[in-house]
Image 1: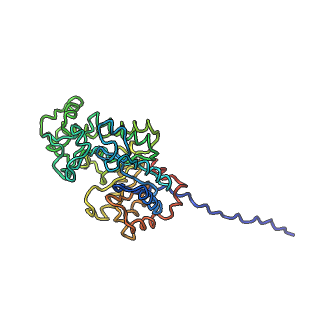
Image 2: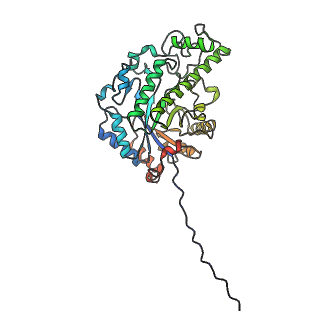
Image 3: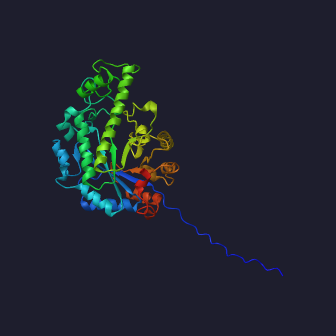
Length: 390
């Protein structure tokens, strides 16, 4: 008689849900002037409910800070933005972001000093006008698309020390979780020999000593070796300044992630046109932890197809060693398809950043962000969004 072999019970298949993917869901914005503590709390509450996990708030610009700054006073600049009195908005923002589970990224705008097309002065221009970049003629800004922009010269030791002092004070005093930099470039459109920057005394002396080019003889032929050497010198100057700045900040806060908003559409041939900001090099060399390409032109100047192409090309240029989270306009949320967000998510990117400036999101945009982000609790606090930037 055959005895049947015992049947082992079927092993149940247990489905294990994959862990949530770390995704930067940033909101780049300006704190409204004279916003109350309650209004700041409401803003952070709405951001968290909309699925945002990183708030990128501008806290330093053109010699003014959103906190009572001892370093600014030491450099003969206002201790705090004039309409704040002695109020510490930076501290309020840090505490509020923590209470709502938001990563606070402090946004500093480095070299821009004043926009003469919009204002007649700034504290930086009034107190340290000698720090500005200069054209060959001595004028403080170039002829071109940004004819009103006056920038500080990165070759001046005082400029590097001051901006480093401000960033170190931020990192030391406040529990920021990342530092976002912008404006580490020459003014856009300054690539022509008759308007290229900078011809200040510091640059003339350093260029003569370091690459043996005489900047008192103009115009330089753009095809000449001297012009090419000078262009490379200026690009290296920005990279060197960035390296110094990061080294100083990380002596204060080791491991603090550094992020950067950069001009979208990087191509080697356009490096001069983009102010010599070689952000692909910065990303691939590990100077910047998260790169956020952004469009600096007029709203609506790019079609959706052009935007999508630019996102893909910038990611391809950055390569697999870099991390990218493109800055997307809130106008993309007005479409049910959100094509730019779909293009960004189709690539192995670190996430995306919505650009809310100059105003705040509308009610409809807050609701749309919540729709495309899904359940915030599936991402935060289970996964640190900064994992995507490391």
